[in-house]
Image (cartoon, rainbow, N blue to C red):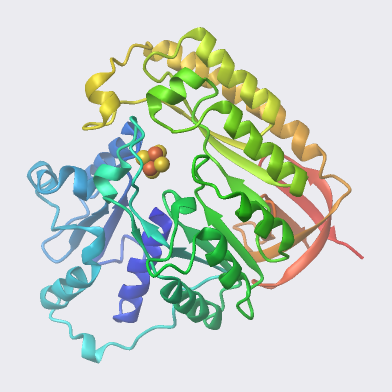
Length: 407
Ligand code: SF4
């Protein structure tokens, strides 16, 4: 979501005639921020400190993203070198303000070619109507707003015309999507987008186990364009903890979704999020999460230690009663477990032919892209961005596959 916001702001700036520069040469530095965890919020403050010696009267330091809704003008008091605190919905006003500051006219700008790369993110829902007790997102992103299918399609068409070959539909809870005029939910949207000429791949994220429509899995299974990857946060493998998190499902339901998805698409890539050390998480509750991870064998598990976020139900009503050292032990235990699972699972790719959508070249000059199941892949030999190439996998690590073009 943050990447999509950064790209949207960058596109607007490029269209207004600005160019991307290294920090040393730039006039304007904009920090896009995330406050979903305490650690990400701390990173924002540390970056703002780092920018203090860079700042001069001619230069602008701006902050946008979720921290704006959480901290607002407090930021300016704490960081006097900060020039602008920009809400996500006010990018246009921010750019107009820059015009005045730099005595610069939009009318004179030479718009640059767009910023669309091989993948283009399209936000289809902003905000979230759930109230998971640990989560700050509803507070900083507000209630759900759904983009009409018509507008989503228009943005996708434009991106494809500009060179995008993959569309990623985004929402904090993308499964809750519905077209405001009643044209349907996410499955209907996916069906319409996947038909767009020139599109090679379609992804969507992030799903919610309570809202995922069974029909969506059927649409995925029947399509050559929709990627076989599901980002489905489970958060905990213990039903009592899920209840305290107000997630709205039980592990039985989660397992049923995974079973159905694998019955339709045996090779589907499964990504999940897990929080350890949520208030009240006993050793038994933690072991239930451990068992679920072992049993499901996810491809990727994003692990986090619980940290209370101000203003959330959990922060105000549930004592943070798992000691920090115990949270860390649980985190490390699951990290080690997931490393073993990922190594075992990725080894299964060796010798197989997989289709890679080439995204570009990495810093070592190697051609890279992604397979349909979401894994990163290195293509031995050449490949142009946007090209689909089939490789035979010769090496597999938890992070990526490597292969040569299949004959
Ligand atoms: S569904 Fe996701 S974004 Fe919404 S409140 Fe729950 S965790 Fe936060």
